[in-house]
Length: 366
Image (cartoon, rainbow, N blue to C red):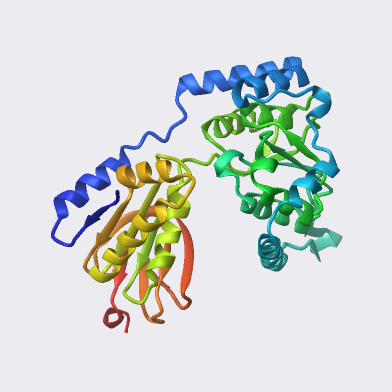
């Protein structure tokens, strides 16, 4: 399922890296043209286009009056979630809120020369639209990670768009919405949802910014409406590199790899370690856990195509965009662009541009 590449297998490692680099992550012209047509149709026909595309792409029939999810329906779906899920989401919301409250920028002023008053005024956006994916890829974390920062910033109106079956198939998403006090939810997904949020329809209001993950159609739509509205980013396939030594727990490492591999069959999840033992343990964990997951077919394909467990000597250089460093040693470190990024906690996350990092041993850090 996932390839284990050891120190001496440099040819296999080079071949794997070539395969990863050759992934087609661009939004092709045919896709962009198709999505542009959907956006133009939603702009022209409004709710009627949303209803038509929902039936065509989601195989779900509804009337324009049913596009907005009723509050009692939202609460009903939330009531189906387990108590442990509700408790866990409340804890997650509290932690995310605490973080974003600490990073919230403040307005400031100062006196300049000749009576000039200088400063920076921080004001929240009036309306934000959050896209929440549906199906087996519906995650309540998408709600938490997008809505909490908006709440902390003081955004007055937060609008949610999600495919019509999301709430019934994943009550945890409904719980997250209820816990965050969100009551404006529209049962529409895909590129048509992005178009509706950008331009508005008879039912869906236009917003100032659109955030949230989605498939390639959602990404293409966000790219096309950028400028009319703000967007968070145009997300490509998920990818992560986990760097772990022999103090890491194999089950934790496997969970981090699976969390990215399940997103799509072109996701890339790689473990880099100096420990043969950990490499073998993680491989076993992956085999055992994949069969239990609802997106096992996607996971198996992404791990086989673009996943790898690589055992490397310390001091080896390799390209990366984002990584997790997992260790119990306070003096293990990663060098990136000449800077030591010490892992003083069990997990340290970093998002980096494409560059190189170097794994150092304890002795090399002194």
